[in-house]
Image (cartoon, rainbow, N blue to C red; front, side):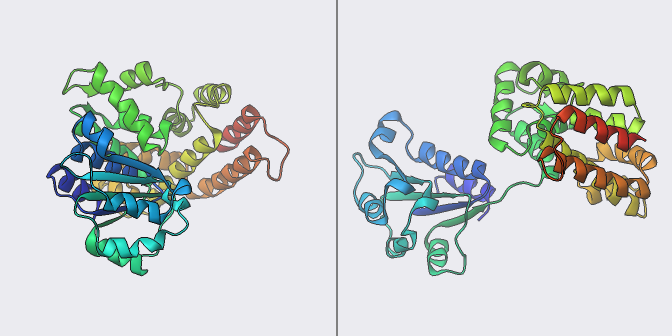
Length: 334
């Protein structure tokens, strides 16, 4: 069962006795567990009496089952959420409970940053009696689209540039992205569009000094602007982690390399699909392909690798980010 189907069932008051939520993306695990608690226990009184939160490192299966077999304080389901379940030593001992779960308890097991083998008996029993969900991280190129969908669901709109700016500067921290978008729902009228200026003003991301603008400067061979941006990055490392900047640049140049392999470069839909980008940005990769032929790209990947090593203190004593940035940009543009 995927995330959307689970959410739809919860919204329709279709509940299962056991939810096993596992995987490396904590956002979806938190969303499902919080949604279950709020939809099943709708008042503060119900949550106070019938919401039980346990932690894997501080409890055991016997205690969990004891709570699950007990009855809530008022006529309703009781919700038992096991956080940090990866720290639960004897989790497979839950099999006997899963075979015959309580009809008045909803057991939610949050197994973040790990998975159980789906071939094991416990996994098969969970799938038969409840929900076994694996929360997988989004690929970086899918995050702008995810941002756009989230914004629409919250009653606003966002353009491709603004979505890209937000995703590239925050990265793949989905919880933080949603938190920032929630600010916009408070500040902007329903139905309005989140602009680049809104992001700069309310989230603190510069519309002038960001990786997206650095990519444009490199494509246009605008040495002055490129150096102004990397100077800003070096002076604001907390908001612009160098390893994240290098990863985004690597992805950018990989897409340019892929662009060179596309036979029909005039087919915008084909290009956008192949590069996994919004069709709006195809023109940027067309321009970049003229600036960076394949022979140049091969060298750029070497430059990026060297910068990554220096940033990590490997194979070099150079750790000054400003100097590493300057060397990298000089090599790319000459």
